[in-house]
Length: 212
View 1 (cartoon, rainbow, N blue to C red):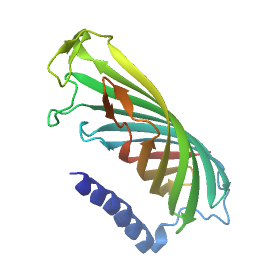
View 2 (cartoon, rainbow, N blue to C red):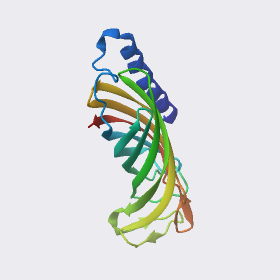
View 3 (tube, one colour):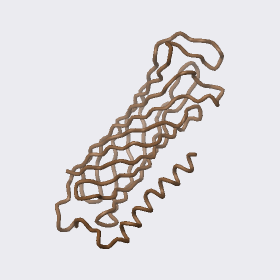
View 4 (tube, one colour):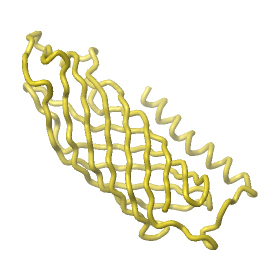
C-alpha cells in the first residue's frame, strides 16, 4: 500500500508537468515581465504513513507561511497535524487509543523553476513535535492483558528533522497547486510502560499555494 501511494505521488508530479510543458500556448505570465510575489501561504491534506508498524496509516494536514529569498531559495515556517491509531496486528499495542501529533517545523527550500508554470523543490529542516495518545473509556488494555485505569491521555514533546520534495503547478500568478512528499523523524521515541514507538513517518499530500 505504501509503495502504491509513492508511485501515485510520482505520477501526480510527472503527468501534470508533461501536460503543461507540452501546451506551449498556455503561458499565463512571465517571471521576467510580471511581478513575482515574495511571500506565500500553503495548505495541504494527505495520507500519513507512520514509521512504526504498530500504528495504522492515518491523515496528515499541514499549513505554512514562507518567504522567497530569491527565485531558487525560500524559508518556511509550518504547522503539521497527523492523526492515526494503533492497529491490532502487533503484539504490542494499546486498545482504543488514538495518536495525535502537532508539529512546528522550520524548512529551508531549494527551488528549480522548470517553466513559467512549474517549480520543483526540495527542502529540509528541524521542528518541535507535541504528541498525545488519547484513550477511550478512561482506560486501556496493555499488551500484558491487564486493564489500566489511567489518565485520558499521555503526552510527549520531542525535537525532529524532516526532508521533502515536491512540485508547484501554477494556476495563475497568485495561486498554485502544490504536491509534496515529506519524511519526518523524531529525535526520541514515545516511551510509556516500557514500550517505545515512533511518531514520525512519511506524508504524501496535495493542496494549494497562495502567493502575495
